[in-house]
Image 1 (cartoon, rainbow, N blue to C red):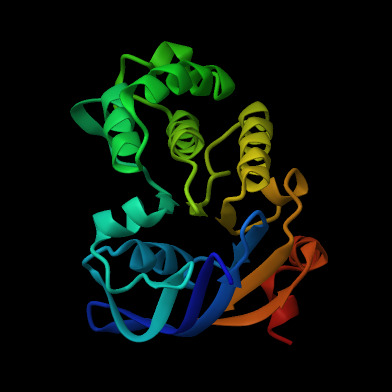
Image 2 (cartoon, rainbow, N blue to C red):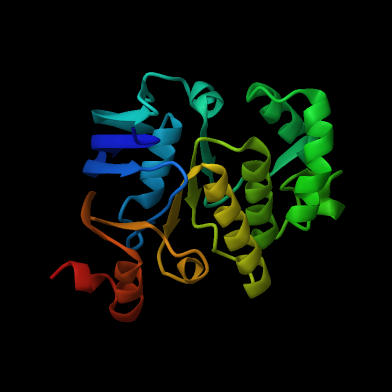
Length: 240
């Protein structure tokens, strides 16, 4: 059984139909990549699966380990094991990073003592010790926000993680660190989907499968060689 299976997904934003029949599956413990040019619907896919109210699913199905995902409220999807790292993580004043993660871990069934032990280890792994008392993403650089998202992934250990451009706005050292954490999470058993424009991060985390989203549908799929081909020749190579 796939960790996440999406069938014939059609999504509307306002009066515009963005996704026009998306089909794919993610396997537990595997790294997958979703590539496509700007405006192709990659972020729309992640937000629709997360349950964002502005992204209306007009047709199709999605299953999280066989459970009907679309029938769940957004917080229920997260509790069931779906994790989404946003392209532009919001700043939340008045909410400490530590308390946010403590409550999130509690919803995933992790007790306080378990959190107390795991949180310092996760901070060290993501090299974020100095951020433990900070408000959530407030004053963080783009790269620091991406590391904070990966910190949440590391703590929550979800069944499925949709990572929307985790490589944007990060330097080369942070890129390597993000790649290492993604690899560790896949080894733990999480099904990973890296959403990206180009194969920079994928050079550090070779995907098991690559999906290409064009014109609202998965137009091509293949192994890591497809990502390298797109990196060399652009998305026109899959339009031919």
